Each structure stands twice: as structure tokens, then as C-alpha cells.
Image (cartoon, rainbow, N blue to C red; front, side, top):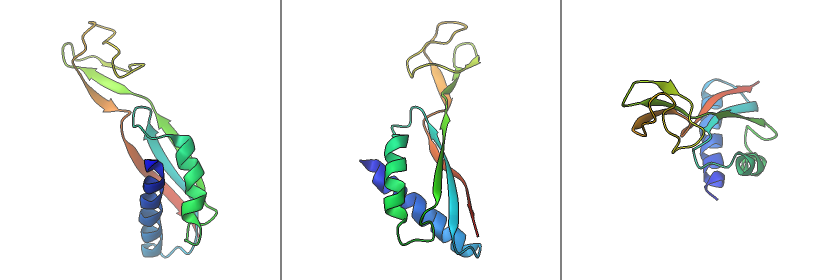
Length: 113
């Protein structure tokens, strides 16, 4: 379960940022997770309270935004939202494309006091 190590990294990064900003307690952390990122949001939500115990983020809420796939067709230049990683371009039927979104994860923000 790599979500546990992801949570540890998120909490370490947020705790360090909160310390630099003069915050003593983190109340909410928001992350974007692409639908094709191989990260299970439910596992992340499960691990988060365990990892935050004893940190500035103890009892913080973890908000997860799911980011849909977005792609640009290399053949015709059409931007589209494929349903899967192997869905063809709806304009030309081509499969040569660049993924623009949906495979990454990032910490968007955190709140605290």
C-alpha cells in the first residue's frame, strides 16, 4: 500500500510548510488525484488520520478532488477527455496522444491556525 508512504510525505510537507508560515495546527489538507494515477483515494483517506497522529495535522480533514483524464491528439490536435487510457480521439479515431491531466497527484492547499 503505497498510499501510506504518500500520506507520510504529504503530512511531512504540510507540517513543514505550516511551521514556516507560523501555524500551530493544520485543519484541512486538499489534494488533487488523477483518475489514472494508481492512487486509491479511499486508502489515502484511511491512512491519513493514522499518519497525522501526534503532528500539527492531527485531526485535520483530508479533502480529495478527483481529476479527470484530459488529452491532446497528436494527429489532429483535438483536446478531449478520454474515458480510459486507451480511448481513441473522438475527432479522428487516432490513439497517438499526449495526456494533459489525470495521472498526477498534488497537494493543492492546506488550512490552519
